[in-house]
Length: 305
Image 1 (cartoon, helix red, strand yellow):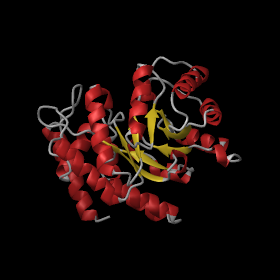
Image 2 (tube, rainbow, N blue to C red):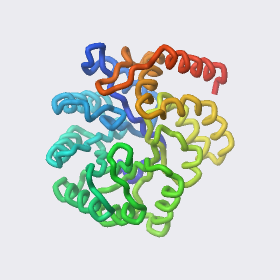
Image 3 (cartoon, rainbow, N blue to C red):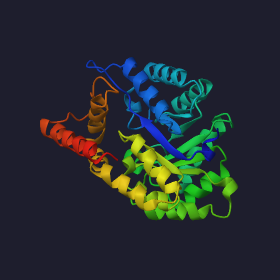
Image 4 (cartoon, rainbow, N blue to C red):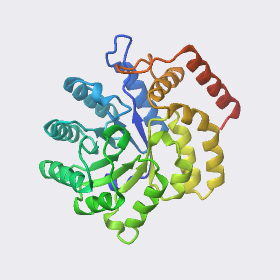
């Protein structure tokens, strides 16, 4: 399936580690099996919240092989391939697709200034890659340090057909999302899939503004699936009601620095990973943090949404 045609929920998969901070293969398998059972639309691995930048080249290759082998083509898998070294980005993208990935996610390289510079960067990457390799452009300035304008982003996608998807995570996001959707309103054939992220912090509004789906690592993708399906069924009010029940935890996971630690703790509580540890640099939850998360999980149990 082309990335351009994807809609729905894409789970950003965290990378589980054991107490020695080695990749925990058994936890990887449990998570993948869980997401397959949920019938989400795709997975993204080795992104920012997958701690992709903390993996060695060998670890990244082994993790790709393990997950893609586990999925066995049952759903698309997008592999994070951003790297300061263009050679590494190209090599990782080629390996990912050769192993069965549906495409790769690439952010603008740090230090680029202005839409022209970003466009030239992606043009160079596309020139080096096989034209059949689809790319998701990750517009996430907090991680890349690069800001993209709407006009430049739209023009870049029109001129480079390999750019089949945008993960829009700039802030403020809503006006940019609306403007981007309007850019393609008369040329649907060139429109990339537009997914939103930011830990699902505004998805009830973003779906109403034309987002094609949600790419998030939120610990309850099954909740986002319900929100999306109710919204697509025309029941925006019920979608919002479901969303509000999970909003305290979504907000908690959205804290810079703290969020991934909270997410892994929830995934451990759900029995999906054995250990919530992050690789350095990473935040260690305090007893107060864990007590707050436990309380929110009890509230969700009572809400039965």
